[in-house]
Length: 153
Image (cartoon, rainbow, N blue to C red; front, side, top):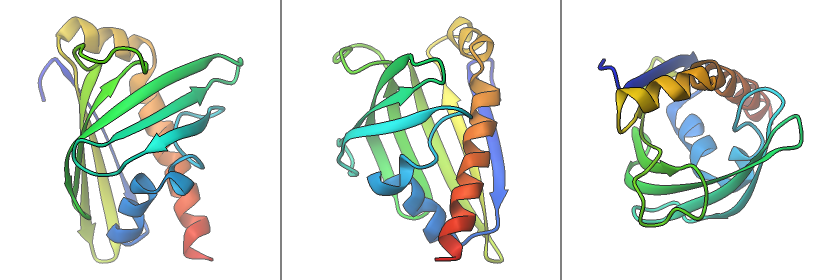
């Protein structure tokens, strides 16, 4: 781990394909994405290399946070990489961070590892102060709750 990376992981009691699908389907991701108290509205999702996911996270205080993801690598169901932009308007600018998500299967369970690589140590420090680590853990907890519901459908 370097001074530019935030790493968050969690094991889920769910098959890898189901977990991967939760990240790749707009009808699923909006039900769990984001920290506690947040909701997510997807404007568009083109889940392919070079495709974009454009969404807004709505904070519990009513603040809207526009986001844009550009997928750079997809290996279903084991790997997902994307560039994350802090809002929809910064086309042509450097990403806020580069995300690598791995999905490792172990006896019917899946470990998800989130790795956010920031352009500088200072930007990683700022994201940490803003709550990126705790937000990542909360997001994965919300994913676990979503997956539990999906398994019983």
